[in-house]
Length: 485
Image (cartoon, rainbow, N blue to C red; front, side):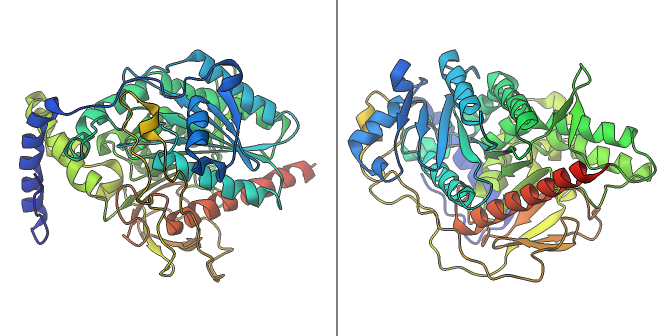
């Protein structure tokens, strides 16, 4: 069923994949699928467990933790909220338990709240590679807090059936069917849940100003996250443009809700190899063009708000995504009347669309540290009827961010044309406002090898350092505001 595409031109490679896509789609009806069911079934005392990443290498511990929706680790806590194929959460009890856990952890101190929405080929089984590596990232952040602000690190994993077909062919050609489910999530309860977490963050921050909120969406999960966060950023940008004094905008930090109260935006939102149409992102670039026409520009004190990163090696968004979108357009001829530019924006993923790109991302230095790949003994995560089939073997993640030598750019402002975070170097395009907080970065394969390579040490070092810089920047602003008369 495989098609050799090496050495072909992009157009011929695209055509070959289109033929394979159509052929495989006809075969998918006979493929066994995972169940559209809640995976963490524990209630009452079983909804929360105390565990460690080391203990999770044991099969019995994996089965115990699979039941729970909340994991308490020494350095962090992790809550899972699950959604069905209709875009609705499976359990209000699960949602409320995670909310209560966050409030309890934040009662006496600030927190770092990290939300992760997985994408294609993943779900909420206990040893899913995304969930396992998310634990490792939270542990890294938690260990850093031991010598820093001593905030509690809390992760929220939004799980859905990104993995549906259990055989290799079905998995590879399920992108389009899963995209439709992701779109439902983005317009239903998942969108509401993200907004509820944002409001919860604001509530906690009024008590503990050092609280931070970071949201990350990968692949189709990036589309879910953008559908929830995108309109808030557009409103905040619009308000800043309209309310500016002179030509420089005040740093964008939030917007006013209907009652006139200030709602702070997340401290950072990251879309990693996001899989949604450029058409859905077009309003933000259009607002930036309108802003330039009005002679307005961003403040040098502006910090990054939204970071989209797409890899040159991401065949899912460079080939699979356009193929699926093309098939969709073939059955929607009315869309052809909108013109060629409109069609291109519907075929190309947002972070791959040339006019949107603001930065080029490359590795500062080559590293021999292995990527966060699953070990051969990792169990499968295609749950059909027996939880024992998704446990056993390794349930960890090789996550070792490389130690990067200090550079002269370490203390450069966010607005610097050339700056580095961790093991990644960002180079801003000459035509882009140096203070633009809406970053769309085209990354080399040394940064992101492929579509799923988001937990490799180079990229993780980049995200952790960027979050750290934003945290320091905001802490400095908070101190300054307290000192001002």
